[in-house]
Length: 217
Image (cartoon, helix red, strand yellow):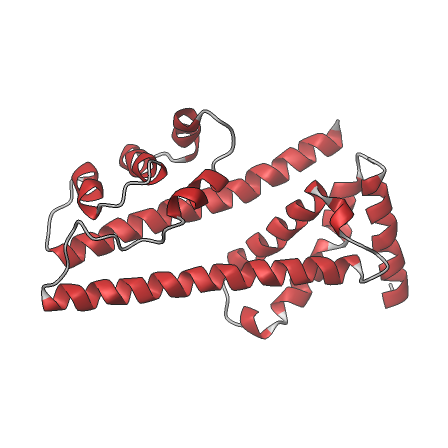
C-alpha cells in the first residue's frame, strides 16, 4: 500500500472509531500499529531498547488515543505519525525513569561504601505512590493487589508503596531481609522495580483484552 493510500486508510479507520464502529480498535491495532512499532524502532532512542518496552510505549499511546480519539486531527498529521510521536514520548519517559533509578542505585552504593546510608532515608521517587495508583485499575485496591501481585511479600510491599511509606526500614521489616544498609536498600529497590514492571505490563495486557472484548460485543 502506497503512503497516500495508507494515510487515507488510517483516516478512514479513525472515522470508524469516532462513529463508534465496534471493529475500529481491532482494525487499527492490526493495520496501523505494526507500522507504528516499526517507525518507533527506527528512532535513535530505540536502538538497543528492550522489545517489551517498545511495545508498551506503542500500546500505551494506542490506548490513550482510543480513549480520546478527538485529540487526533487528520488535517495536521497522519494517524501513524500521531501515534509514533506519542509512543516516542512514552519511550523517553520510560528511559528517563530508568536513568533516575540507575543514578539512585549508584548513590546508594556510594553511600553504603562510605557508611553514610540510613534505612530511614528516602531513596525513591516522590511520584512512586501516584505511579502505582495509576497502574492499579478499580477502587478496591486490596482486592486488585491480590489479583495482580502473586507473591504475599510483594503484596505487602505494594500496599506500603500505595500508603506512601518512605522508610526503607519498613520495607525491610515486611520482607524479612537481613544484611548491611546498602545491600538492604538495593534489595528493596529491586523488589519495588519488579512490582512496578509487573503492574505496567499487566495494565497493558488488561487494556488490550478489554478492547478486544468490547470489539467482539
